[in-house]
Length: 554
Image (cartoon, rainbow, N blue to C red; front, side):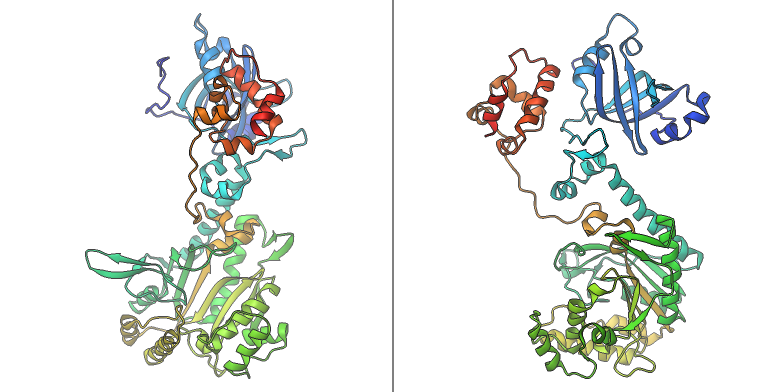
């Protein structure tokens, strides 16, 4: 600013090229790249006196840019190169460049910069991801705690992370396009609900001041979407956030995304065929094939998928015939296995626990687990031929549930009885049991046609299609514990460990804002980087000896 340069200009900066466009097309269309303008973030410098190379990263990739002092500063005043470019610009700063494309003597396509504009001065040191001669990364920005908390930095220095979210977006776009082609309507339903329903889960609670009433963040979109089927729509779907006040692990986040779809005059058999067709299209759109690799194992989303009843699956993997056992016997066996079960759990909940503990992990390829006990599925139509079961399937892939679907219950009398059974479970202490929803019952009393419905977990499907074992990798901003704030060290703190006052600004510029951060650093790296920072900041004091730097850290 003292030099008369606004580091945060407001004016539009017009670009006519991108890094990816230049690298892909320059060789075959050289005349088209005589006057290019592009903008991005400086990611590397190689300053060589009156000429320098740097790397510029935009949203499409990274390209080398070449600066020559006499091109940047054709007159007598060389400040904009000698001082601004060489000494005041840092890795992470955003600039716009104008010039022409050429190929260096080493064969690298580059932009010869004739003019540059500072578009944003970064005030925070950017982690520098380094690579050796073989391209292997070291000193990478890899700490998950930092990456998830500072996703903006993660996306800058780890470009492959951006590709994960591009694939996620392509997955959703493909699903939406498929639904739209079928003529089904995308809708939006309330996030704040007076009665939480549509799933067995613990909700988040809030309070509406104007209405003076308790509300819940929705745990499912199901009951409102089915009201729309009652209202006359043949097919409706919603991509939306759901919120469940439950545990967090590598496959669970309290805020997650699903798509729920309901289509009139269909059943769960039709839904299974539809899902196979849908996921084939999604897999091809995202990865170019129905096959994808996850954790070294090949998964194939091409249908048809195997079908296995939940009781048969348990019997196959444990030898236990839960279909003929009573509640007490199943609970006793669970305790013998060391499972955490209690007296509030009914037979259906115990069966669900056995399946989750003993069976899920064995289901790798896409498989439908079908025909669950009626107690497990209070919103599902009773099985047309199998007593005690309902017409429901869950799609499991790689040991995790990806989708849950029903032939929807549309008998209001039966539905009321199911809700009453849920209330009995709640009285026994099951805090995930559903509440009575009188308005939904009233909607069913007006008549809902036979309907098939499904919910698909977008986050878990994205994990599978991008080969990520943690749900936090496919959510831009996963929930985190509050950040522990560390106080910035004072000059006295630095001096107390032996750092000369003249070198404190250099260490801060290198990112060592606290003494613990300095103590955790590699002494050799600090010494080497300090030499470069000393030169950049024009520190006249003698360079500290290596053993002095080691002393600060040890």
